[in-house]
Length: 487
Image 1 (tube, rainbow, N blue to C red):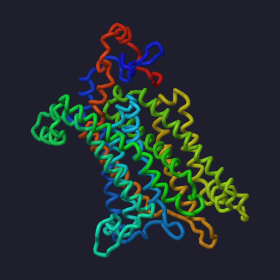
Image 2: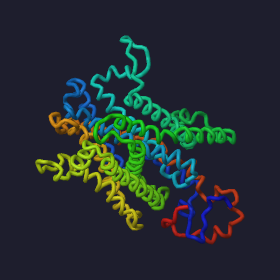
Image 3: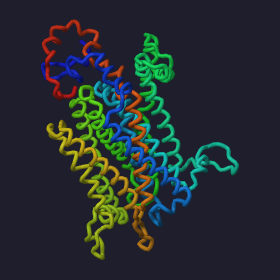
Image 4: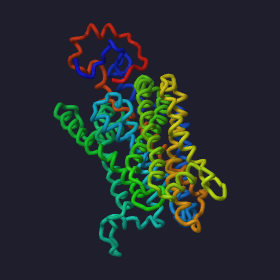
């Protein structure tokens, strides 16, 4: 029997409910693109398009008036824009982790959720790239950021981490799109062969790149998929590490620390998993994917979020330890007063101005995920839905705390200021949700949202030695579909 066949004596079962066939998988996924959109899809789509229109109007006003309409000021030259940039980049990390790293570790449970996560990666990176492009003030000159000849003989400063960002994000976006598309090729061919109209057959046939499902075709496909998974894996670590260098290479109190790269990567995976879970619960309910994305998949994802939450909590504690151990009074002030809000350190007896944002971060990112220690919470749809929303709120506050609390009160009290977001700040942030949700809803409507070919490989019939244990399989044909222990 193959190594990934469940051991029934200890309570393991197959990922999908017993009796699921390859036809069931194809029918459940393909029918979404072949039938009319359900009412739930329209309920989500229309507000998303409205937010997308808001984003378009806000960007038009921003280009006409300049970035002075943002709340950025001296000394808070970075505000909501860079906070949102780092947050959206973090959202995109779960896709690569689920698709590439879990694939290399041969984790079969990824097959029901990897297509969601891959699509969200591409869309999140597009949303993230918008903010630094607009932050330059004159985005029509953003081609100066690339090492190409131009009329002013200006060349990028390759010593700057901001320039590293340009190349890291663009590389990540390119590889993510290719990796996502390669995985879609067999499923596009399935939709092509099921198409009843010439237009659908032509469109999906073009996207399938002539796929015929031959033995040689599968050999090349699996080799290419493995190569792209290997290329994508280091990007999970490198991209958000490079983003963290924007802060870590400075001398601003609260930023100048070596813990930022692993800290940012863990936080990115944490927030990415949370948003994947939020979107998956909605789509699962709207399209009736309860058998293909079952409680066991959700249980395993909740365990993963619990683990990354503990890593993030450890990073928060280490920041305070490093501030104390360094003996740097400026560093200690930022953490103990600006963030934790201890009033006794202030000669005026005032709390730090943004202490509430730090404790909101701690509550959402460290305390809320602790409920996942309990199986009832890990398998309760309402609890995990609320928890994942709170986690992403907390991860946004984490980026806000890092950026704003360090900039508003730095070395010189004479230069201290405060940051207040404007309507344009809020409108642009909400607008990116419109862009993200519009693209995501179009994706689930017209592209297979679950990897049909990969999910079929997890069925009992996909194991070549299964016939030697046919009797054992028959004995467990009516096994419970409740969550089982992870392999």
